[in-house]
Image (cartoon, rainbow, N blue to C red; front, side, top):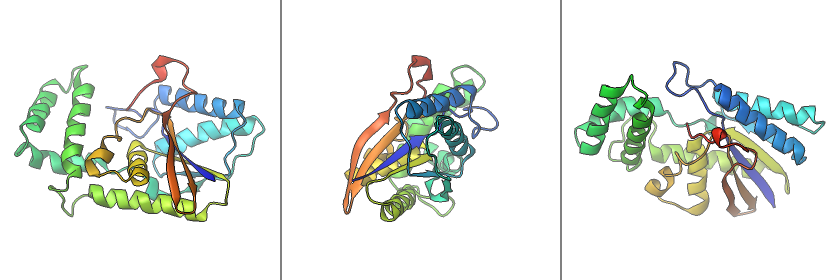
Length: 239
């Protein structure tokens, strides 16, 4: 039986110009993960990361701590297929169309515009994003300007299947990625529909990990949103 661990990146710089950069708290979360692995002598046989800066930096911090503890850390493999769906493009394209058909989304959008410079802006934007994603994943607003939810799910399923097919039996692969790919992989393993799957996008904590066991045709969810390394409630973040 082999193991696949998907790690969500540490907290990014939400509501800032460069969202993709880890925040100070995000770097601390990544250090905690590396320290936990080092303490428990966890050393993966293969490390893969998505293309985002937040994926790479989370991996670098955790991996360096594992290496400093004298444990093996393989040369990382870059895999663009484990990138997040383009949430900014989805919002830019879908939001104007959805406000004309969905009163709840229109109300949240107006509320955000009114309060965009207030402390409440981040919370309202998250609620708006969730509602847009729920509509987007249904497929009614699909167009050629943005990757569809169905296309995204197929991309992630293909990437996960490739990991499984190329894994040495009874080994451990770690992938540093985002909440969307983790949600899609959960949906892939459990056979969930589009709406059920998208709900997992915003449930993953930053720097949490989800694990899957696989052998042959078997691919099973073993753990979701695990954070045994985050020993302080201030480290529990979702954006």
